Image (cartoon, rainbow, N blue to C red; front, side):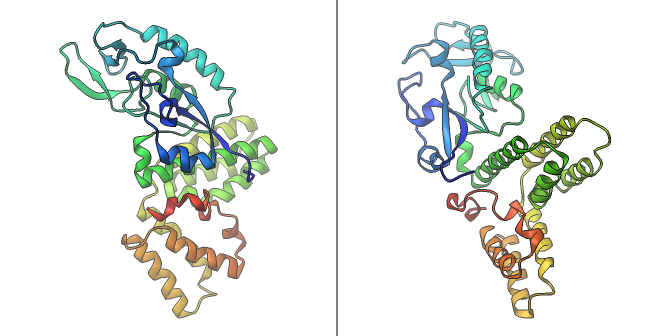
Length: 318
């Protein structure tokens, strides 16, 4: 990504500060607009307004079977499900041409919530078991695109995971657009090995076999299987234990270079991270120093050391 280029991300419009909610208000999120906005170009979507409902408007909620709920106004009982679905399918056709590499949805919304949206029974009791009509259709149509809700972005681990997935998906689309070849796939995998290891060693093994043994299958099929498995792996949490394994693996590359004191410092810093005494950025910075000092070629290419802009400080809190 060049200095001027921004990544195109879909966004629930109310999160930008636009007064499009049912009560005429908004839910501007300053972290989204002020911090992430330096790197992302927003493609705003408000399902209710674009579907044709006014501002302000009667509130809606999901009712019925959580697996297939209806979108109904609270007081008048008007069912907007079919109309919203028709609009959403057309909107998804439009969004397919927008080059989106992520989407941030407004949580708890009957149209845009990704999970745990309240679904009401005929008796009026609610279960947090639904998915917003538009969000559900979006995720079904674009299963590879990283998606998250606004509220969950305030959790440091979930935030880092989501933004990491966006930048990986960006690198994939750029690499594949630049040259569709087995060499492109092999190089991409080599660059991301340690990052994948931090999420799922099992997926790393599967992806490695896929790249190493392409058989006679068409390259497009191999690539499709690869990116699907990769994005599946990255959804799994990179825990302190898994990150520690990666950090110790990297430290092994310097066992012939470091003296006893430096080796003790490095391993001690990794242990401090494992115990929760320091954030991930601390051992990462120390390892980056040794990678530069000893010019270790394999580690120099590892995306794990710089998966997203340092200015976002995502590893300062995990």
